[in-house]
Amino acid sequence: MIRIAIPNKGRLHDPTVSLFREAGLPVLEGGTRKLFAKTTDPEITFLFARAADIPEYVQDGAADVGVTGLDLIHETKSDVEVLLDLNFGGANLVLAVPEESKISSASELNGMRVATEFPNITEEYFREKGVDIEIIKVSGACEMTPHVGIADAIVDISSSGTTLVTNHLKMIDKVFSSSVQLIANNKSMQKDGKIEQIKTAMESVLRAKGKRYLMMNVPEEHLAEVKRVLPGMAGPTVMKVESDSSMLAVHAVVESDRIFATVGKLKKAGARDVLVVPIERMMP
Ligand SMILES: Nc1ncnc2c1ncn2[C@@H]1O[C@H](COP(=O)(O)OP(=O)(O)OP(=O)(O)O)[C@@H](O)[C@H]1O
Ligand SMILES: O=P(O)(O)OC[C@H]1O[C@H](OP(=O)(O)OP(=O)(O)O)[C@H](O)[C@@H]1O
Ligand SMILES: [Mg+2]
Image 1 (spheres, rainbow, N blue to C red):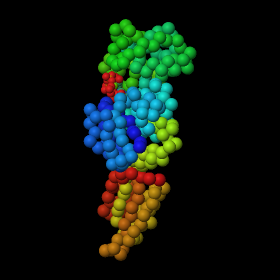
Image 2 (cartoon, rainbow, N blue to C red):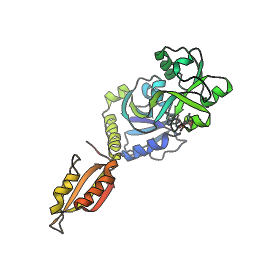
Image 3 (cartoon, protein in one colour):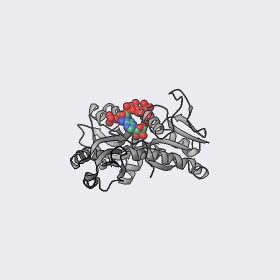
Image 4 (cartoon, protein in one colour):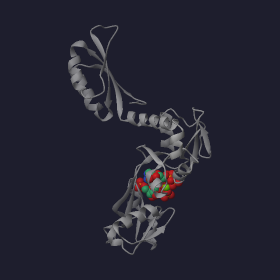
């Protein structure tokens, strides 16, 4: 039996559930108040937990696999295996000071107070720089602390930067760069090949996200030209069209960000009836 811990709420919940659905492991009858949920594989269950608790759940074996932010994995110093960067939930831990502050670098904070929800990452950052600070541990609303005289600077999560601006703070350094990871318990990895299967399924979804499948009809005399437009890409696969012996069906996988340019060139090269379709999963 494999237990996968996923964020029960917050901004990571929905994208995590979507990714597992796309990977062929839908969360069945989930809900924010539930602790467990089934999926289509009877050997796998989902456990809903706070994103911040997931690294320790996985380290201690309460879950075999987990999905959570890299910042939370580092902050809890959890001994887990990082299997895959899931490429969402990107955010930075930043060092920020009030807009009007003269401080412009970490070294100027010697002897001062820094408020954060991430004391371990913050401590490590300043230790590496040889700067001695006092950490003020808070559990939220960190941006407020410099304005009420509790701290001189903060280390907090920033993604769009809106919260910093709204609270009259300016970033002076990037402390840690985070995104959501698929992690596993070290022992579980050895006992069960299923974890590798889960990783492969997730990987195949991520790989497919950047690609599109192109299908088109190409009169035989234009095939060489069309192939020239598609160099370096997987394929193309060329098939005969049953109803029209002079027409070929050409299929190819193309990078999503090249679709616009490629379709234009294909049309010019003589391709017709071009279809662009999403790819659900791509196994290597
Ligand atoms: N804009 C952001 N603000 C906060 N966390 C973010 C942001 N973008 C990505 N994350 C990541 O989300 C994780 C925190 O998830 P968590 O569910 O605890 O926070 P949340 O969505 O703010 O929920 P809560 O409402 O409980 O604060 C961290 O790994 C963090 O890096
Ligand atoms: O750069 P931004 O896009 O503005 O995002 C960063 C903000 O979002 C998070 O707060 P959240 O909304 O999770 O509230 P919380 O402090 O109650 O967790 C985080 O703690 C920052 O305050
Ligand atoms: Mg939050």
